[in-house]
Image (cartoon, rainbow, N blue to C red):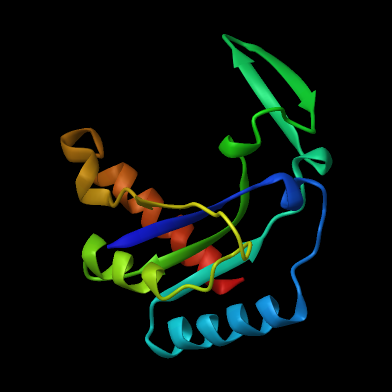
Length: 140
């Protein structure tokens, strides 16, 4: 199963405060462990929401909203994409994670939909399209 691991933003990440060398080294070591175990598929930190945009959809209309965004606790400061056997395994990995802020922090883990989760609506033609697109992405 794939799991998206979401590191929640806080006032410091939203202010653009960069992590310390010590935290960067600890996270680097943790990422080494994840990669060596075949768990980590991707992972990145994100710039503060002040540098971001949101696009609101209302029917056919699209509205672009400039950051920063108000609710810090609802924002994401970084992410990993992991391949694990179960949510329990993901939880065991996240318990080993260095505290991403050094103080109060929250990390959310969410399963990623797989093809079989969509049922009959995900027709053989749609599955073939998905596989073709994934193959194209893997080539890049």
